[in-house]
Image (cartoon, rainbow over all chains, first blue to last red; front, side, top):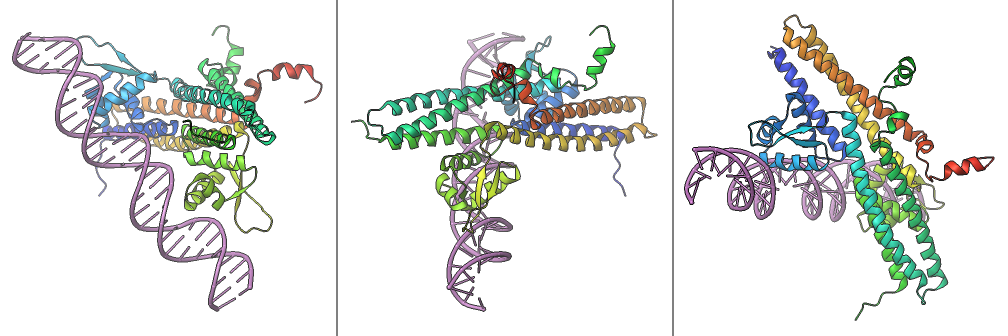
Length: 193
Length: 193
DNA sequence: AACTTTATACAATTTAAAGTGTACAGATTG
DNA sequence: CAATCTGTACACTTTAAATTGTATAAAGTT
């Protein structure tokens, strides 16, 4: 009474699950799940795909594909590929997991630091005005001073985040956390890299 | 014709904006904005607050506070504090920016790695079964083999993420990216830490 | 220039997450 | 043990994000 499934179907099923898994991970990165499905589709196809093909593979509307691919190219995790004799736009994706992680992670955090440093700048100015206002009582001055210190600490924190971003972006992180933990030894054993 | 605002009001306004800023950042971390408002409220109060006080400060319902604080304690960024002579639950929050970042970041990624390694495990078994199925053609075997390699690479990637998590969790990251970039020099100048 | 093909702007819909109000259970007090 | 206080389960509402369908602009073909 077991349902008959061919091995080919089983393989397809596995791929589908991997695709959903990647989709789920994208949500954890804070990006739409669809991005994950697009990555999987292009990866399994083994070549650049156009919007219609992607809509087909992901089971979504072409409109959505258009939107998502634009988003992906803006994040630098997809790019248009020239395909001979077709006027459709074809897209390839970054296939290196590590690089995708780094790109999405740093992109997100760079935005955060930029936004926050901008706001802190404005707030800091405002607090200085309050501090130097002739009507400011001792108590007011005290609180303003306290908030200014908070703001400075906050900026230092975002500068730390910026340096973290730089650590990943420059790939320096791989010196401290190698992709393959055995690399350390390997290096010692071989003459060239 | 300018609206008259007292300095005290201006200070309150600043605090409110900082609170919203933290809320916004929580969204970037992938957590509900309300968490940020709770952190700010407790920080500015300078003491543990109970659910009613938090509802008051954040302008939200007590029910929501209950939910959010439970979430926060589960993430280890808030904890119940004993307050003499009150039977209400009072909460304190982690006040160190860096630690909050690390806690939320690592918590999120730990979940991801656990989930993914589990799935890869199952998928890998399934692929082996397909590979060893007597009905498997050369082509099927080839594709299965390929997918098995993918799966292994994927697991190696998640193990890298695990090591990244460990780097932050252990605070070792501060050796490579110090909170204060001048620490490096400071260390050289002093006898004790 | 009319006709096709392709991508996308825009408005509408669906879906998922955040948040609320009521009701209730467990603990505490008189 | 009746009366009150506190936190939360549960069902409902609101809000924001993802996704779709239609309409249109831009480019390519005949």
